[in-house]
Length: 271
Ligand code: G1P
Image 1 (cartoon, rainbow, N blue to C red):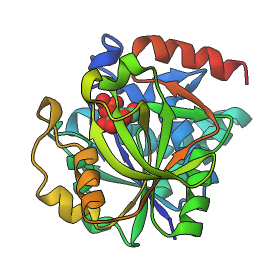
Image 2: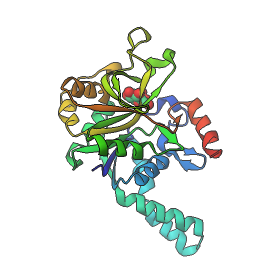
Image 3: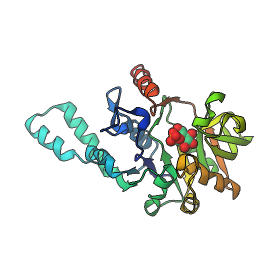
């Protein structure tokens, strides 16, 4: 059963400066809606019941945004605007399912996930990177269906331009299961173009076994001095864990860069 999702939100968002100098990138509007709400909607539609937000003190604005139901209540008392009532109901629903955990030093995605260890109840959980929006198809839902069939970890994947492999985690394949799924042999975080095993990139949707926590606990800093989830996943593979790579069917939008962020609003407005 996959009922819990982790969303790391403590990153500094330097690729989106100046927009992020005083504001959290995950609250920036994409076609009139905070980016992170697309991720929450994806989780809810995939059957997730609890979402763990990993934030930092600097990003308390995110907690404030989701805990602001009292503010809406006051406005609604004075002004019975249906649009605001709908927003109020939405915020209340989100508030009920979100738990906040702190990562005050930006030590990377692996460290963010480790911070949630004591709250994870089942053997597997979902993890989503909020910079990666996938539209037109619910990637998390499809991955949960794969998990139900194979009872193992699943990671989203997409072919990227060979010249850009050093921007991504990169897989090597053991074998294809079918057109959309393959068994992962190995994964390497941001390899340089000369020793990248392929151009099959890791995209930010992961169904992971709880065993990842024991690897994360001992994980040394990797590329850029950060603790990468990719490096601990590599260790799971070395231990013989089965992990499936899933070539998702939706459209990928990279909201973590300025170009991608601008394009994402245009793409979503056309839906
Ligand atoms: C992270 C992961 C990387 C993955 C990417 C997908 O990198 O570390 O393996 O390919 O997300 O967006 P980041 O975007 O944090 O640099």
